[in-house]
Length: 295
Image 1 (cartoon, rainbow, N blue to C red):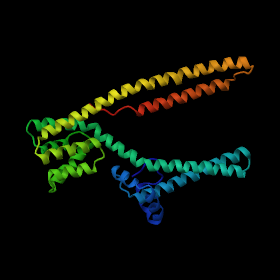
Image 2 (image 1 turned 60 degrees about the horizontal axis):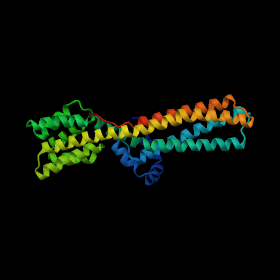
Image 3 (image 1 turned 180 degrees about the horizontal axis):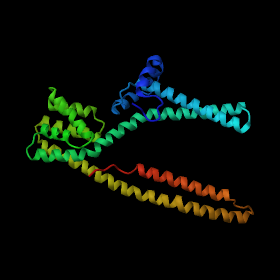
Image 4 (image 1 turned 120 degrees about the vertical axis):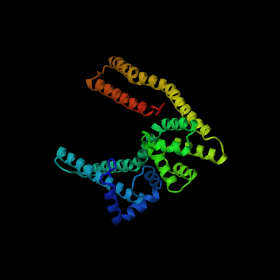
C-alpha cells in the first residue's frame, strides 16, 4: 500500500524499521499522536515503522534538492563556491522539513477523509433505519439492512456491528465497540444515543428521530453560517483583488509624475501577478470552507 508523497510503501516501511528501529522509537516519543492518526486512518503500520519511513523519505527528498540546487549553481557560475554549497544545503534542509511535515499530517488528513465518507451517507442510512424501526422492524434487522444497503463506508461500519452480534456480542457491546473505533463524530454520537436509549429503556424510534433531527439541524446551520461568512470573503475579494491593484497602479502613476520617475512594465506585471496569486489563494481558501452537507 502506498501513501501519497512517501517514497516507501508500507511493506517497505516494515522492512526498514527492522534495521533502523531506533529512529522510529525516538520520533514516536516526540510525535506521539501519529499512532492514533494511523489507527483512525486504518493504515496497517505501527507508528515506529511509519516515522522511520517518513524520516528516510524526507532525507532522500532533501538530498535530491541539494543535488538539484548545487547543479543549478554550478551551471550558472561554472564553479561550486562555498556560498553556493551553504545555500543549497539550507534549501535542501527546508525541503526536508517540508516533506517530513507532509508525511506527518497525511494520516490525519486520510482519517478525516474516511470520516467524511461516513458523514456523506450517514443521514441517508439513519433515515432508512428510522423508517424501518417506525414500521416495527427491530434495531438489529435495521442495521442488517443498512449493512446491505448502498451507503458506502456506513454500510461497512454497520456490517462490522452485525458480525460482532453474530459472533456472540450483545447489541450494546457491538454498538459500543463501533462508537469507540469510528472516525466520524456523528456516527459516534448516534451510537451513544442508541446505547443510552437501550440502557434506559427509552424508545429506539425516539433516539433515531433525535439523531436525524440533530444531523439535519447541524447541516442547515452550517449552510447559514457559510452564507453569512461568504459575504465577508466576497467583500474582501472585491477590495483586494480589484480595487487595491487598480488604485495602486493609479497612485504609482500619480507619484511618478510628481517625482519625475517612471513606471516600467515590470511594475505593472508585478502588480497583476500579485493580484492573480491573491485571487487564486483566496478562491482556494473559500473552497475549503464549503460545508459538507448531505440532505
